[in-house]
Length: 235
Image: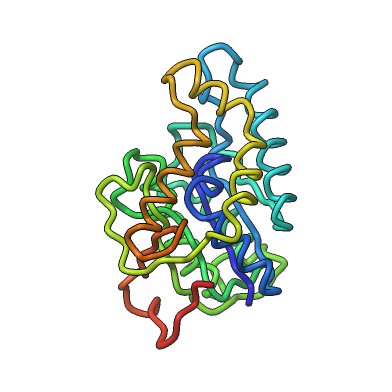
């Protein structure tokens, strides 16, 4: 299968779905990751232009840890909106290039607008990519509408997953990928007093308790028309 994960900020996918992505890769599937926002406001000391470059490189390094192809739409933080036609064209181009059999992205009730808008942008772009005449300048052909899985929220707040992925065998790989985001790990420790690697490991352990394994990630399948399939697509 071809798997596409679309996250808002450069470390969102590592937090919520890199366990599943690592399992997909171990099973021989092709995995692509794409972040919409460039993360340029994710620090109180490092200025936006410098941070944008740092966070792109961190996301690139994290993708290499699991063997994923990395894309970036490069929208400034707090300016992510599904009404941005340029964003949709860029994301639809990624969708057409990857040709995903399944897409993973944020939940529509996540904790911040950029995350919610990333889901709506993904929903819109995956539909647009199926329309042959959506972008007459596109160099790739249209693709079928893909199923969408919502990944967990940060800390799992408000998210009750009906489906789980056992990531016990790849938890260290997931945390290794997250460790590439040094700017954010240090920022979280300095600003919020949170050891974010421990935070993510703990959340994964909680999801594991819920489904009877050591570590897990939680997911919800989009229930929209044309997005459901009669088989499990999660690893």
